[in-house]
Length: 275
Image 1 (cartoon, helix red, strand yellow):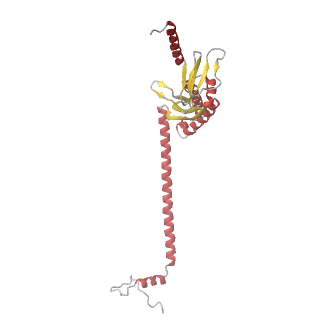
Image 2: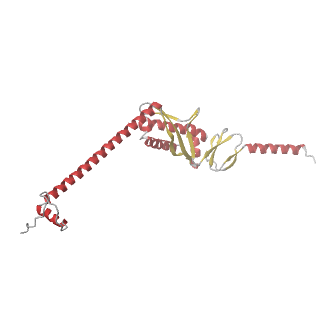
Image 3: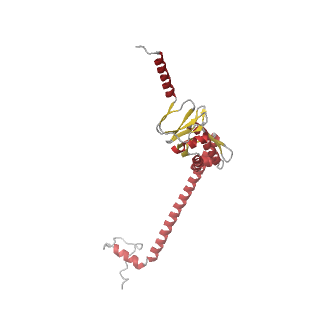
């Protein structure tokens, strides 16, 4: 049975409509919220409400931007010829560099606010605006510290202050920053690293010598105290050694046997002392 030209035309139109409809549909997957933007006409602009998980027919004059609502992690690192690491200056004007990372999320209720602020997708927001925000915060804090402080004992203070600045600024725009973190250590000129390490080693050596001196003093003090204690004990013993006590101790140790050989140098027990 042959179809009429009318039926074939209808089927062709339906097939074309199906293709166009499928191509005009976009999906918001789980864990995301979407923002539909009208590109042309009187309704041009951002939709008032975000769209949740589902399929949406956009047509030729609309565009869908997806925003993840789960925790995101992104790093800016130096990788071969591609360098996304962050450069800053210390209080001395020394240029230093570091790889850094960020974890953040967007509240579902803030996706429209975020898009209206930046007018870009999430990748562009991360790699442009958030990166600039982190870079500016790092430069602000590093300019108040010496390279020795940032590289050493104030490293934690540095990243803590950077976190405070970025979290506050991002929150205003609707982005919840979990943390900013450093990846590895700072990239410094080799001569600077050697100078810092030499100073650290010198400090450690000085502390070692100081500890050894303190130990020697403590040992000397201990010997002195022991010597003083022995001298005091001997003094007390000497004061208590009377002739009667010596004679008594001799009697206590005598086994009753008279010596076979005697001389004037051998002490004799005075048995007449009691008379």
